[in-house]
Length: 193
Image (cartoon, rainbow, N blue to C red; front, side):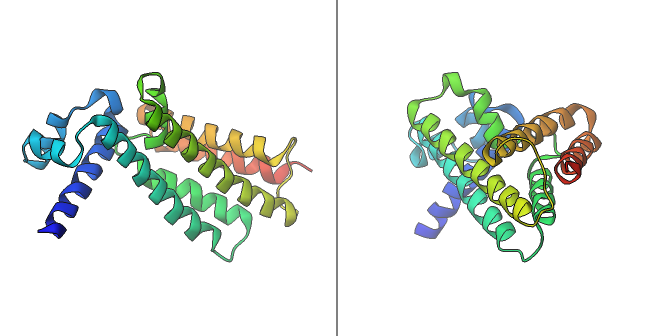
């Protein structure tokens, strides 16, 4: 019985994550989740009494994904450029082609309406992602393959913001936009000497 409840909770989070990426946090309801899973709305409330509880669970799911994917990429014994490409590919795989955007970007678009608990979790996710990109950039600088103006932290922020905006644009203009922008980022990092 407990395994079934755990699976149901995971199904609710997975469904909410899909709705988050396509509709935004404020634009889906527990009824939407219940309808997709063919369960009662009360079942959703059983696992997540308030939408804030679900929002915090979504942030945790994103954090778990970050930790898993970022650890996998950082542990690869390859150059920084390959690692950065792997990040772009994972971001694309996670969001693109299905009319989705990055779930973190989706949450950020609703930030003024979200409760404090979620704002803190979202800020932590931002820091987590920027720190990951900064590690790749530091590797590229130490390999003498990346050359850019300014500090690593600011360059990491530029990469994260640009990749998220490119994902958003790709919803209307297709995946080629995302790929072009990521290629340009790569060229700017490699060619500045």
